Image (cartoon, rainbow, N blue to C red; front, side, top):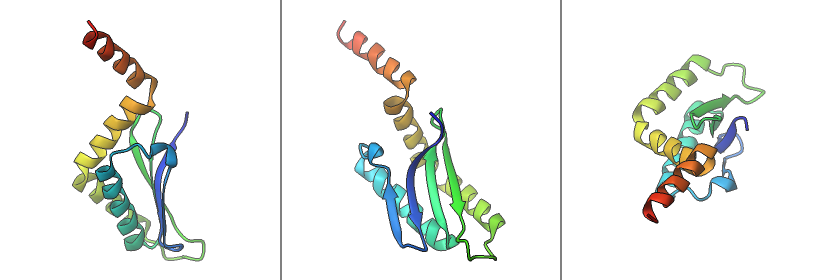
Length: 119
């Protein structure tokens, strides 16, 4: 399992998409994620992507429109750093959710907890 896309917002197409398999995310987190993606795509005039790496780390990606020759790559990197700094709690919650519900390690953890609860 490689990188997995969580959500994408496109400035050019004025669309937002969240991967259906992550639809079980709590509604509040989904709303915060949508706001973050849409605002960032608008601010940078690009397609903004958020996803999970294999171990649950969150990655961001900007995709500039093909016809755009003056896309500010440095500005985009700075914006991603700002997002990481200002949204630490959201990003931490996303990572924990992913590890618990989408990885083998999370499944093992759930099984161990169930054994302890059932005595």
